[in-house]
Length: 135
Image 1 (tube, rainbow, N blue to C red):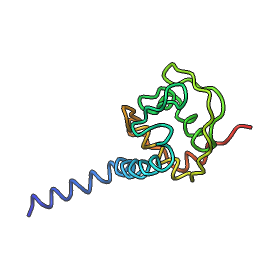
Image 2: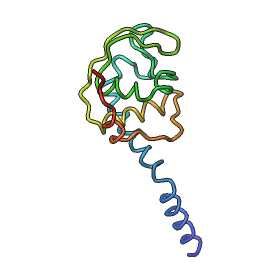
Image 3: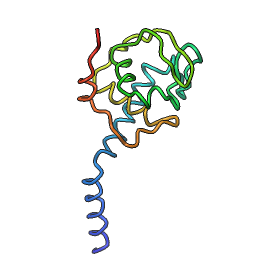
C-alpha cells in the first residue's frame, strides 16, 4: 500500500511540475489533425515540401529561427520571397482561415516534428493573437 501511495504521489507531483509537457503533447496531437486537413497537400506528409515551390517544414531554419514569421504566415497567409534552408521561395500561401487555437496547435506540431525541436516551448493561442499583420 505504501508503494502505491508513493507512486501516486510521484505521478501527481510530476504532473504539477510538468503540466506544459502534457498540454504540449495534446496541442501537438490536435495540430497533426489541423496539418492533415490544411497543410499536407503543399508541404507533404513528411513536411519536405516541394523544392522551389513549397518550402519544407522539416528541419526548417526559417521555422525554427523565426517562429513569429512562421506563425504570421499561417495566420495571414504569405506573399513574397523567403529563404528556407538556403533555397529561395517566391510563391503565395493563402490564409487558411484558422482560429488562433488551431494556429497554435499546428505550429506546435510542425515545430516538434520531422527533426524540428522547440525545446518544449509551447506556442499558445494568446501568443498567436498578439501577432499582428503589418500593413
